[in-house]
Length: 238
Length: 300
Image (cartoon, each protein chain N blue to C red):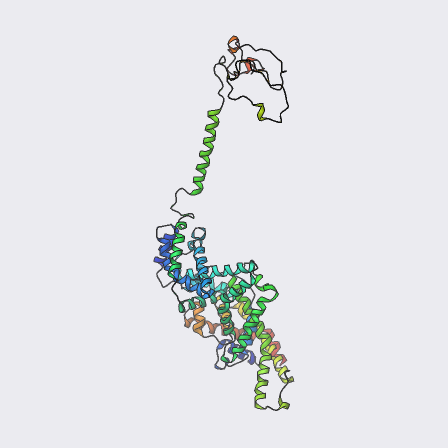
């Protein structure tokens, strides 16, 4: 006994005998064998490879690589067959794109076409934003420096205060006696050397006076420690 | 290697990426008809086609022409762009299902895949006398895809292309349909033929196969299982190109012409003939020494 029926089956399936096309069982047998041979692996062919393969743009080594992938993955083989049929259908049914749609695609796209990461741009937008930030920081620093109270180099020079604390701006602050300016000096600039009862501390009726800066050699009211601890003032106390 | 010169195509694409003036306009004018035809084939209606056209063009420009940057001149720009359009529209379709817009999604799905589903059905079920059978197969596949809230389509997890995933599933559903329906169909067709010849009530045969038919079918299934086993072993020993030939041949319900295999494999027809002979020789060899075949021989 020879495996005649099996030989005949394979001859019919792959050999292309004349009566095979008329064999009603052929479709069922190939479907059965195809399902049994399918290992269900999935592989994705990228567009560049697929287009190159279909246009005959792959060399033999790359074509063999692709055949290997197609032989392993029914998904990839179906994708290839579909792409091939699609290109064939496109060639048979080629149409001209509507002129208005082409024009609008060109017009709408023109401004944006150069915006995303064009290699010709030598100074991209994100760098400009960094420059703007740096300029803003520099402006703030400049304002701070200009407005900063300079430390007098002359210890005898009066220290002037730029602002006077306004109790009215702190409505929730505890009610304490406010310092009274001497009569006739309501709008005179507040001098650091002038006697000013410390807020929140001095009793309302305090009349204690401080000597004028010109009448003393030591730093007024700022250095509770010895002169030696204030840099640059060691000579003043001597 | 590619027969056509792609230097001009590469130049156009490079100019667009470099942001040269008028380059985008040149490219659009060059590819507009290709993109339009692709959208027309895959979307159908005019409004949908126009929207799809804009989507494809936008996709080409997205992320600093990311898709275009892959173009290396190994194919014509038209082929490359047509396949990108197909991918972009497949992704759009997938998003419809992911966004649970199933009714819109199904309409778009049929437009996109109808030609491919019919191609696969025609390939597996050739012949003018099978038109009804093919129609039934199409309906059966669509019902299976819609079933359980599109469970099969939603099972796509991004491995492989969505198009390949869907078409592979369609093929498996078709194979199931053929295997489950065809024997019954054949019996009914034979019964109908007998009925036409002898219209007497008493002569109308039953739908059930006769004991002889059942035995023959059983033997046929056994033979097919054995062939399947031999084929798997033979396929493991084939080269990758030979194995690819085998898969292509098994995708058809009739012997596939060598020129069609040659077209799909991008090889000369003469080479395909040689390929076929090598595959047949390997199958015969495996058949002659396969232990399961020896067992089968002993049993008959």
